[in-house]
Image 1 (cartoon, rainbow, N blue to C red):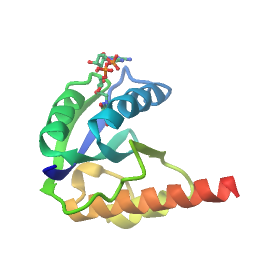
Image 2 (cartoon, helix red, strand yellow; image 1 turned 30 degrees about the vertical axis):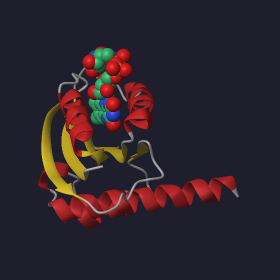
Image 3 (cartoon, rainbow, N blue to C red; image 1 turned 90 degrees about the horizontal axis):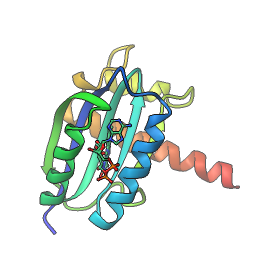
Length: 145
Ligand code: FAD
């Protein structure tokens, strides 16, 4: 497998409701499992930030499909690089919205007091998503204990 990661930012469409995000996740997970795509999606302040990991061809095709989805707009690629190993292998598509617990992470990596994923550097976007995924796993473990 020619493993890559792709990170993009986008803005939710006016016609897309917050409730619709659950449907987006359901179809993403349904498709990503057989496609062997892993990753993480976050939604905050009206913006999406998503990382997709998997085979180069499959990730590219998936991104093209996602970019045409009318539920968001202005998809901008922040990173597309070969990787040696997956960082999100636990998630067919993990998800987190903005919470009190993770607000500090958005500020830390955005380097501004307002989250704007379009302004993130490639490295900060990747680090933010890893930090959000780690925090999400920790809170899930806590809830299950
Ligand atoms: P369906 O889910 O049945 O959708 C068929 C078509 O209708 C698609 O073109 C879809 O874009 C459109 N559609 C469905 N519901 C609505 C609606 N309520 N309003 C307007 N149009 C609608 N897909 C993945 O495979 N993997 C991902 O990781 C992934 N992440 C996503 C992240 C975001 C932020 C968004 C907005 C979408 C994401 N998607 C992802 C969904 C992707 O855009 C396609 O909708 C999906 O892959 C198509 O699945 P499907 O063929 O089963 O069709």
